[in-house]
Image 1 (tube, protein in one colour):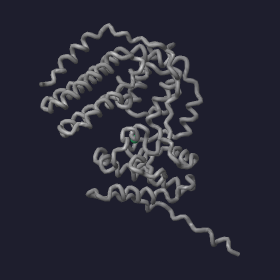
Image 2 (image 1 turned 180 degrees about the vertical axis):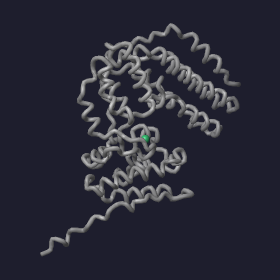
Image 3 (image 1 turned 120 degrees about the vertical axis):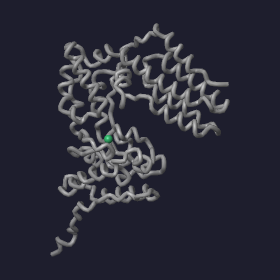
Image 4 (image 1 turned 180 degrees about the horizontal axis):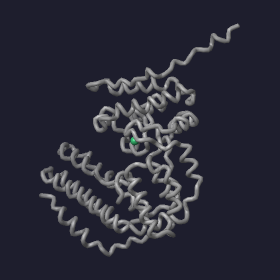
Length: 353
Ligand SMILES: [Zn+2]
């Protein structure tokens, strides 16, 4: 039996022009907050670390938006004409991540044509265009998977057919009110992991499905997802991927400690992309990262030396040791340079009479 879903999938898509997309506007306006993932560290210290001016991400080296700036922005009004809201976001444009920059520019253009419209209205007007583009991309990936799976065992084919049928349902049939489909589709495909044979093909399939566009790396996915969100959430979301977050070097899942010495400051985009990928693999995917960690730590060390970052005197050394530990079996063990750190002077004896 050969999988011949390729065709059925496309036919299926062609049968769906009458879908009803309209959804109620009773969505919540919960802001997209980025926290330090419930880390068990001092909240004020964590805030200070995420509030360093012009700190660059340890992964992508792009500058991040300090926590306090974001707090200030959150207090602003996001309702009313998008032109006004976009003006408030403009000072942070340079620090926005690429997808958000494109969405920002697109909204600026749209708001000039439609000066009274709010952010949500502008996004809703573009929804169908971006949705169809997104669906094309999703289909392409599913079709690649079907091609990839031509030579797998009947058991794998059977399971895959079930998964693909479910995927079709998620993409084309079910309510458009819940557009966060990517994670659920990936979860469907993860069922293949239980199959004992076809390991190589399954691993290729799982890699391919990860390529599904997400709102963080694809404008079409962004517009599709945020059609259902309020003005405040859309506005804040344009900045949230550039916020500093604390990434556990050894993931908590792998019993990594919940301490600063096990944490690097990464932008939200990089942190969420990494998930719990081990650092040696993550380094291979981001060959510039060793340099970028150094740059990030140099800025932090400068803050410590200037006395602007209290309670972090041991942080560079602890991170250095953690990075050494996780890369100990790599060709080149990672050696963070912390020589610029001024030794804290021991003042305990100076006050002696
Ligand atoms: Zn980054």
